[in-house]
Length: 125
Image 1 (spheres, rainbow, N blue to C red):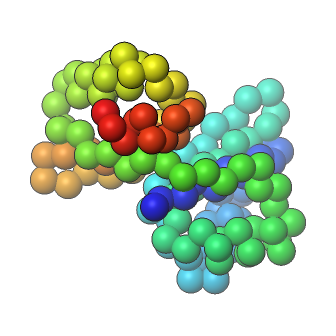
Image 2 (cartoon, helix red, strand yellow):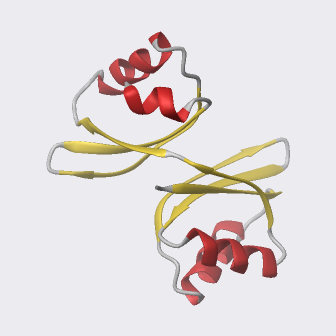
């Protein structure tokens, strides 16, 4: 089960570098990441291979972990309209997407990370 860790911090240079270096020092691999800034605050989303180790390192490093949650990793065909088709299926099932971002690509597919309000309903889609 992939877990997303969300860190909130001031928006300033070096934040992503510092967190990436910290996780690297403790042997945690980042499978997917997204970062956003809004009104002076930074919001960093990480999906890692060892959430427990990552959380311990972030907390001991003084980082404000504001949320952890299970997320879906979905493979979509790498062609126009696939994100819309998948998101429409979720919407039609009454599932709200709170966060989504691409994690990678392989052999004609794109890997999408999706955080939703109803994980079980999303899995059925």
